[in-house]
Structures are given as structure tokens and as C-alpha cells.
Image (cartoon, rainbow, N blue to C red; front, top):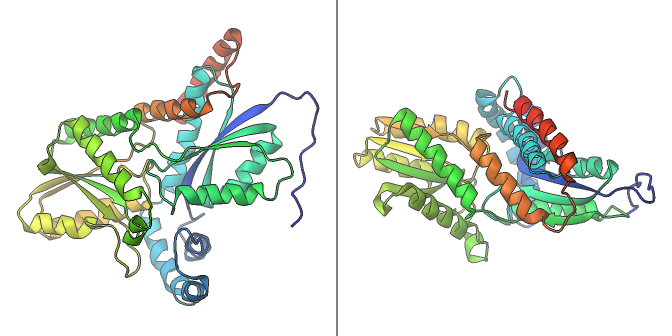
Length: 363
């Protein structure tokens, strides 16, 4: 395989650092063709579906991609915004705000966002920052809890890109921050703000994205890290074991996934007489179809249909200031040793520019 063409090299050129915030991905439009392209890429990843290719690919292309895109397109259409997919809108805004916060702290670096599936792809953004002179790249996945299905897949995409490069930048990966103090604190503040505005329900349900149960037995730490996030958030909020519950959503296929499942649990709670529930999705740092449609529409309807009286969804961290500060703290921990700090006089100018960027991103 030939190497990709290299950008012109200038001896003595100042080295640059880039940070890429990576989220899962989104289709380009809420249409069946766009969903077919997106799902084909997503469900072809062996990290996502661990079934032998000879068995899985005929099912994927012969059955799933003929039926699922139209159904998924309707769901995406129900949450699509004038600016596009909610996940893309929030991730782009987070990247801009993160650049602003790091700039205010005196760091000179480029912050971009990429998607593991869909656009902008990890490879295209790596090409972009490399062409701009980046010789050091920090990859920051938007997944607080590590999983082979998500975090490791980002690493795979970066490795595939690196295999085509003659001059590979210095690379660093952030694998997890499920127990980070700033992240937990940002979640807690979002819940308290929600309680203050809407009142407090009888129970707080923390719903994480599910994965097949077999991954737990094969050594994936995701389940344990979700439970730890839930426990730390409950402690920060002063909740007893009876006042909160960790569940798992977005089951796909017939295999057993991590339990308890979110929607059946909500139905059971309502049938047992629980009248009100608050639900937060701590594993999602940006609102998306899984939170806005699957939870705030489908799960809400299931709970109320089963007899529940009040279902209240706590939005994702999105662009909350305490979350952006936590992201900046996480990034700074992993930037240590790289010369991103500016001289004092340049820091003042950069801080002014960063504040202007942050004001623009928050509008």
C-alpha cells in the first residue's frame, strides 16, 4: 500500500500540537440513503459486532441495511435541528469552547472534532491538522467509560490512518475519565440544576449505552466503569442505594446485553407504584438520538403508559461551563510535557482571542 503524500517540509518550522475531540458519529441527513451509508460503516466495524465476517456481512447487507435505514431515518428526523444532527452540533460547539478555555490557560494548540463513523472522519481531520503543521496530536474520545466497542475503535481508526503515513505525528490517547472529579462534578451540578428548576423525582435512573454481556466476561472494563460512575455520582449527590439505579439502553439483536435494561426497568418501576423518575445518561456527553428520541420520547412514553405520572429527562452535559472546564482539565493532564505553553505576553493576546471564540460558540 503506497504512503499518502506528505505536506511540504520546512526545516526549522515550529512544531504544533493538535487536540481532536472524537465522538461516535452521525448520518449526514435524516434520510434512508444517508442512514444506509452510516449504518454500513458503523455495523461493519468488528469492534461493534463481534460476529465472524462471513456470517455477519451477508446478514448486514442482505437484511439489516434493507430494512433498518428507513426506520432509523424517521427517528433521526424527530430530533434533527436546523443546524443538523444534535450530536454533531454539540460536539462542534464543545471543540470550540475547549479551544477557548485552553487558550485562556495559555496553551497554543488547534482543537478540532471528528467522528468515528460519518463526517468529519478521523482520517480527514488528521490529514487536516497534519497539513497545518501538527507534529503532536492528542485524541480525546467523548466516551468517559472505556469500551473496546468505542474507545478502542477510535484507536483502530487512528492506527489505520498512521499505517498510510510516512511521517507519523507523535500520538497520545485518552482512554477513560469515568471517575474524573471534574466530570463527576459536572454531572452532579447538572442534576442539581435540573432539580432546582423542575423538582425532584422519587428515583434517579442513570442510563448508560448497553453492550453485549459477553464483552464483560471477555475482559472489557466498560460495565465496571459505568457502575463506578454511577456510584460516584450518587455519592456526590448524597443519594442512598435506594434512591438511584443504573441501567443500560440501546440493545441491538437477540443476544443478552448488560442488564438491567432501561425501558423494561422503567415499566416495572411504574407498575410497582413509582410515580416519578428523573433520568440522566452519564455516558453520553452530547445529546443525540439515543438520549433525545430513545429516552426522552420512547422511554418517557413507556413509563407513563405503565402508570408513571412524571418522567423528567436531565439533558447531557453538552456545553455546560463546568463540563468544558472539566474537559480542559482532562486535556491538560495529558498535554503535560508537550510545549504548548505561550510566553506571558502572548498568553494575554491568546486569552482575549479565546474569550471571543467562546462567546461566539455559546450563542
